[in-house]
Amino acid sequence: MESAIIMPWGKTYWHLSYYHRGQGHTAYVSEEQLESVQLALQNYRNLQELCKTLIDYSLELANLTDKENGS
Image (tube, rainbow, N blue to C red):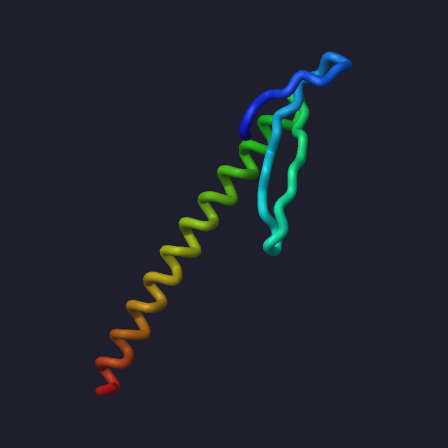
């Protein structure tokens, strides 16, 4: 989350900027939703790291398979 914004009616919202399918978006997250959104963002970061690890291992396996087959 970038920063807290206090709206004219007195509620605090957090500014969230993100990209989806190449398009920039902005959302405002209420205090009530903040913990849930932060957890979702952390889960997404974890997923990205797991995907990178899966790709690394897949490439390593492909290289080992090529070496075994004499390619």
